[in-house]
Image 1: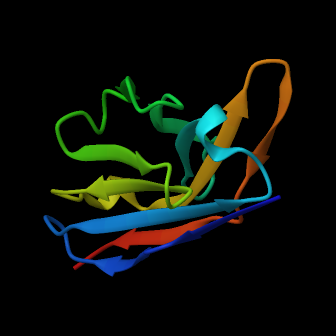
Image 2: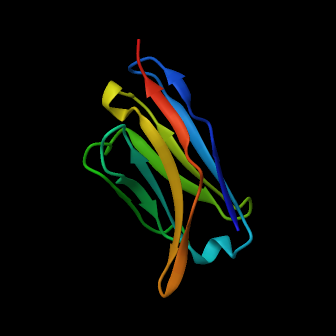
Length: 116
């Protein structure tokens, strides 16, 4: 099982990034997918979630209206489009695969730094 994130980097405030997470080794469409982030010295927090069939999404209040989670089950990939980025969005972003009564899986993380 693997979850591999990409797309992080350094961006100026107000800029945009799109994170990708490619999954392998499990039935991707059967799992809800989540993006978490962890800033230095802080606890990991849930940013966005999407159901297996992509029928429903949820967002943390801090990113509503700026971030969009989506998935392509044919490509085993989940995305996080991040617009209007702020310095407080700086963190390591992780993707997470979850399904009831089953262990969950984590990627290795990708660094996002928002700074001028």
